[in-house]
Image (cartoon, rainbow, N blue to C red; front, top):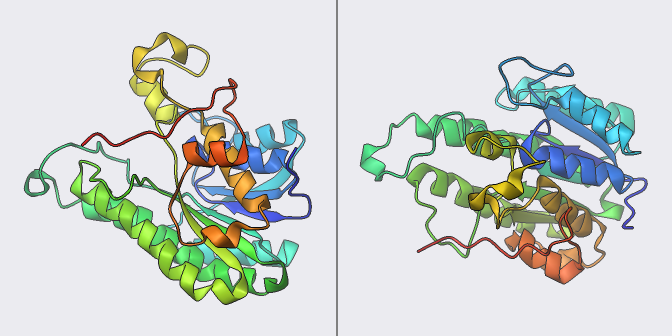
Length: 281
């Protein structure tokens, strides 16, 4: 089993979806994992299952460890405080997974740009792109302070060789994250901090399962989900990237989870090698 013992990780937006899957896999691999999010408590009424506290419980039940920090990454003072706490408690940060994303607060419609509400901009960029940018702003100095060990920053995004993703604001925001990772990969190359945009496939997030009136125990009964992957799949990709001594050869280059599964030889939780999800042109 891949070991990340002694490594300190931060997964933003860790209460549900890809963030939860990544946090659990990092913890299982031995990293000490901080998870941030806005939802607290062990359960929430009228909200989808999952809070930072419930995920922390899952991490510990699986033999891992970490801490949950309540943080709204659209508020810079809260982001700065979260990084300050990690610095105070650990003195280092080796793995940063920039996963916070408020871009799905309203439905992502497949309409021409001129028919979409301009509010999509703040939805995608303030609660998505800028939230990730400011996390980098506060976290990178801490990561550079332990530069002898290098490190890795991962931006979860969606990318398929620059094919259009069918919603102007979503496409623009996701490609902005790809470009952000590229720019930082150039600036952090001397510090041996790899920066990688990572694209999952058709993930069975809580939102997806809820929209199809199913759950993780019964998804195989739903035709639309036959090519889907669990959120652990991207988590396993993150673990392999974080443990790869040659990861600097990939810095700045967009990666797809399905391709990394072939490269590193891991499978999804059901033993399948789920292929890369392709954007239909």
